[in-house]
Length: 390
Ligand SMILES: Cc1cc2nc3c(=O)[nH]c(=O)nc-3n(C[C@H](O)[C@H](O)[C@H](O)COP(=O)(O)OP(=O)(O)OC[C@H]3O[C@@H](n4cnc5c(N)ncnc54)[C@H](O)[C@@H]3O)c2cc1C
Image 1 (cartoon, helix red, strand yellow):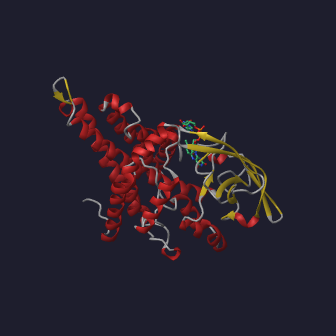
Image 2: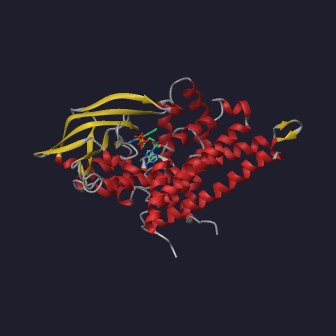
Image 3: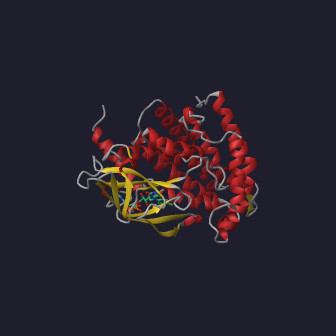
C-alpha cells in the first residue's frame, strides 16, 4: 500500500511543489551561472529575501516548529515529503529554521534559553551553526580535543573547529566540547551556546568546498561564556548531538530521493529524444538497465524513508536504520546522477545544466554527518551484537 499523508499535510506538500515549480526552478539558471563564475552556489541577496517572503506568505515557515512557538508542528513524514520536493531543484533555498539545530534546542534548552535562542531561531530572527568537527576528530567526534573548563560562573572554551557550515551568516553556534576528556562520549562531552563576537571566538578562515559551497575554521582561545549557556546537563551533550545528526540523516535520505527523481526525469526525457547510430538511446539495453536499476533503488529508498519517518513519529529512536538509509541513499543517488550525466554526453559535463551541481551535493553527503564507512561500521557492529537471529 502506498504511504498516505494526511489530507492537510498533502495540501502543504502541494504548496511546496508549486513553490518549487514556479519560484525556485526559474532561478536555477542564475544559481548555476553564479557558481560557474566563482560567486558560489548562491542567489543575489534581494532574490533570497523575496523567496523568504514568498515562502512566509505561503505558510512555509516554522514547518516543524511546535505550535506553542508559532509553528506548523509537522511530523517527520510530512517533513520528508517536503524535503523530497525541495530537492528537485538545485536552487539554494531552505525553509526556516534549519531542523537539526531546532531539534537539539527543543531537546535541551532551558526555558530562558528557549526565549533567548530557540524562539528567535524558530522565527528566522537568529541563525545558527553547529561546531562538532575538529582537525583531528570528525568521523570520530568522541575524540574531540576542544575543552570547556568551569571557572566560577563561566565556562572557558579552548580548541579548534573545522568544516563548519553557515558560520558567516550565523548569530550563535552550538559548540561541542569535552568537559571530561577521559569520559568521552559517555559523560564527557557537553554542548554550549556561544554568541558570535564573544571574545576568544576567532574566525580563522573560509574554506571553499566542492560545488560552490564553503565551510569555516574556528579557533576558541580562552573564550569565556556564562555557565548558563551550557545546553543540557554537563557531560550529557553527546546523545542530543547524535539525535540532532539523526534529523539531518533523515533529511539527507529525502534530499537524495528528490535529486535522484529529478536526474531520472532528465535522463528519461533526454534518452527518448536523442538518437545515436540511428537508434534512440532509450532503446539501448545499457541505458534501460540504468533506468531499471535506478527506478528500483528509488522505490526502495522511498520505502525506507516512510518506514523511518513513521517509526520516528511513533517515538522510536533509530540509529542503524538511519545509517543504512544514509549509505544507501547517497550511493544510489550518486549512481543515478552519474548515469544521467553519462547519458547527456558532453552536455552532461557542463555547468549549464544542474546535474554536476547535484553530483557535487550528493558527494559531500557521503562524508558529512558521518562518512559512509563509519555508518557501515555501526550497522555491522549492531548486527553482530544481535548475534544469530532465530
Ligand atoms: C560540506 C561540509 C559541511 C560540513 N559541515 C559541518 C558542520 O556544520 N559542523 C561540523 O561539526 N562538521 C561539519 N562537517 C564535517 C563532517 O561532519 C566531517 O568532515 C565528517 O564527519 C568526517 O570527518 P573528518 O573530515 O575528520 O574525516 P575523518 O574522520 O578523518 O575520516 C576520513 C575518512 O576516513 C575513512 N574512515 C573514517 N573512519 C573510518 C572507519 N571507522 N572505518 C573505515 N573508514 C573510516 C572514511 O572514508 C572517511 O571519509 C562538514 C563537512 C563537509 C564536507
